[in-house]
Each structure stands twice: as structure tokens, then as C-alpha cells.
Image (cartoon, rainbow, N blue to C red; front, side):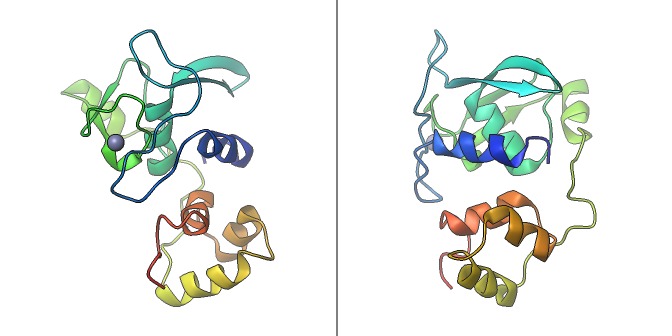
Length: 154
Ligand SMILES: [Zn+2]
């Protein structure tokens, strides 16, 4: 993962996560032009980041290079629903975005429905990290189940 589990949990706690298709507004401070912002310690340096870009980075497990712009398909600048964030990349930028560093997902697989059901049973007893490690999946995969963003129907 490009962000630590603690950073990911803290990030989503500051977002009004709703249904998959709805907007998820950022709850903390805003930039002067209306985007959600936060400060995060990355590689030992404190940085001020736009919330919707961090949401996209967490979901895709890709670090966007500085200067790559992201807009919203929903026109809601505070929205942190990764499905509403559109990366504006052309030419060189597009290649940089596509080849960004990937984290621990190498060798990690997607869940089967059977696994998702078992995870749901374990949510009450184990932490998100413990479950992710035992199933060898990314932290956010389990986090999404916990929040009801994925596998809602089972
Ligand atoms: Zn939205």
C-alpha cells in the first residue's frame, strides 16, 4: 500500500462515505478553490494533499505524480468517491499515471464470493488488517466490505 493502514483509516473517517453511486464529501478543511485538503506524512515529509486525489490513490494503489490533475464526474469538488474522480492525463502524464508505483498488491488476488462471506463473518472479531493479511488481499479490499461498499448483497 502507498499509504499506511492508519493513514487509510484516518482518511476514510474524514469522508462521509455513502452508497457506491453517491457523493462522499470530505468533512475537513478545504482549499481556497473548494477542494478537500489534508496533510499527510509521506516518505518522511509532511505534505498538503487534495482529498479526492488521495481517495483515488488509495483505491487504485497508485501514487499520482505531482502536477497530475484530477476532476470530478459529479462536479462536486469535495467528493471523495473514487468512482467519481477522473484523472486528467494526456500524453506523457498519462504514461506516468499508468506506470506509477504499485504497493503490496503483487501476488494478491481478488476475493471469491465464498471468501467475502467468510470475511463478513470475521469482521466483528478481527481487525481489517488481520483479515486482509490472512486472506492475502489489500487492506482496502476488506475495508470496503466493512463499510458496505462492496459485497453488500451477500
Ligand atoms: Zn461525487
